[in-house]
Length: 476
Image (cartoon, rainbow, N blue to C red; front, side, top):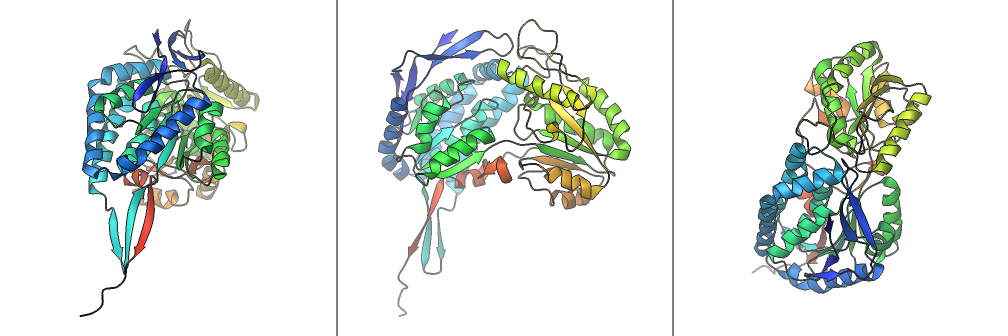
């Protein structure tokens, strides 16, 4: 077990004031793999003031210099890929091979990409007699989740630092070890003191300081819609900018003319990534009622290939969930679905036969559009299949949730799929299994949040716009 006794504040490791610690569990074995300190409000405030003191010098640094720091961090991450991948596989439960590619490879790429974006960005533009300039918003408080911990940290602090902001990070208390490793890498990269700060702790203590402190100019939060509402409410009292990336209940709409086998396989893969612990997971598969039996048979065949096992075993395609609480919550939803009359196509509420670990069987349930599981975000390896009578009803069902984060449309014609996708109120839609684009904007409609992450759109979230009205030059 690794013990982390300190927070990272003002360029140095500072021993925690409180003796209280937070245990981090290996999701496959349930053993405590590490402890981190439970931060206090005073430590969070100290980090905010350090970030404020560092802001003027950091924001005045040439863009090329800031970009060079980001590239050093990317190189440091690449050098510690194996260590980071194993850490996240144990914390979160994603199988190691996939954790290496997705949970570490993606963030490493983003650090370098944000350096390129900053270098190539149009920081100033003339409009008539005005010079419109982009400037960093200031001190940013970043509150991040456990499911893709390093990715969500990176998509906040990398563009913020590239833009010239200083940051205070509160990582998830459930999966914080990867953040501690990242802090070590950032320290080795030599960032000036106060530019990056990390305080571990609980949301109601550390997180609420970041959301309320008058010296924080922006708070960027990823997590549940319930917690996001609380962050937005607190931040509104000081009129901070707020970026929220929240829950989802994304629909994969399979149209009558789709390649049914490809669509079912693709939907199941998009649902089961990270054992369903993905906010944009395609958790509702909408299918023509006339093809329901065909879809059931295809789904049974496809889901049988998703072998469940400990995250460090090479044969595992699905690992455990992140915690006992999350496992129990997901099993509770499965039981609710069955009680409401769901057609159990695969899996169920009986956990797989492992002595230890927070495992849930990959489960597919046929339900009605009015059932609980058609509305609630489950955040586990659970796919619901909802039949529809025609295309109009399919679009209505897809839009009938409080969320609007991701989704997919499958059709024999890309044009047809795009036409339907334009009618779905959600931030990102895959057309016939179109691959993930790391430069495309990611974010949601409705109660899935506001703001966008990744690429130039994610970079612009951390900038203010200033207009300088120039006196016209007199004609000669």
